Image 1 (cartoon, rainbow, N blue to C red):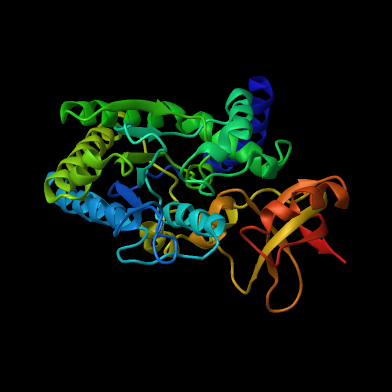
Image 2 (cartoon, rainbow, N blue to C red):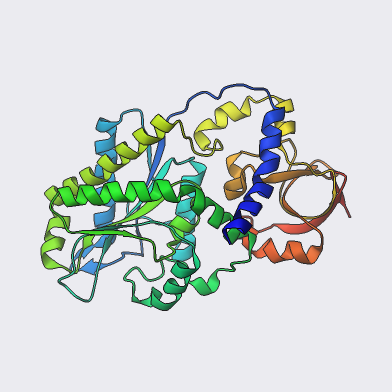
Length: 374
């Protein structure tokens, strides 16, 4: 399985590497680091509840405190919240959580941290825990058997809805293999921080495919700060002292993580919104060199049409940034940006449903020598 993934990765990344070597050798300007905080739930999705205390409120309070602390601990860090009030992106939890991931992807997040609180039928259960993404067969099979027992039911992807042969799953798996060491490192540091506060450290888990983590392009983790079902822990989580201490543990772990990235010189995808001003000034020649080769013939999935050329790292391509292909059409909207190259229309259609999750009007087209064929 691992050899198959490596082969797929080589096929995906090789054209990008080739194109990069053809471009001018100009060192990119160092950008500011970006962290996205996702306070779980919101709006009509309150999460867990204990009397008049709602999880969505605790999550937001902690996220706001983390942002405040990071402003002091690491002033140059750019911090975004997926929500800063009692709101949500969509009433459908799957769409809501996916849109939060896409928000982080658009911002070019070096790290995304989902903030939640937990609950359990056994009121004695207590402590903080951190979840990361894993897509190996053992985890997926466990998820299938145990999913209904988790308190945040619905915030994860039902394994029955994952096509393990789809391009979407292959891309998610490739991202997971790349990010897993960083995700696990952040999770372990945060768990140690919880322990230093005297909280029960429940450890690092990877046995649920959380929707937020599945669609992230960069590193990320989901934090369960404690158990609202435990009366003593609920009192602590709802207190000003508890919120500040928990936020301190999270912010310290973030600072440690970002310093590690700086030391290693690692950066997230350069397609972030904060770099759009730089991209907009790119020469027409660099845009031309950015697109994938469409000189052959076959079928592809059209994402968008444009009157002008668009850099493939533009945020409008969402999770397909850097992997689109330019095919020329006719008329004013002659620039057709597409994904994938398939030998038959049937093969292209097998990935169409996944692509339409991001581009609802996407459809299959035929091309030859860089042009659409009607």
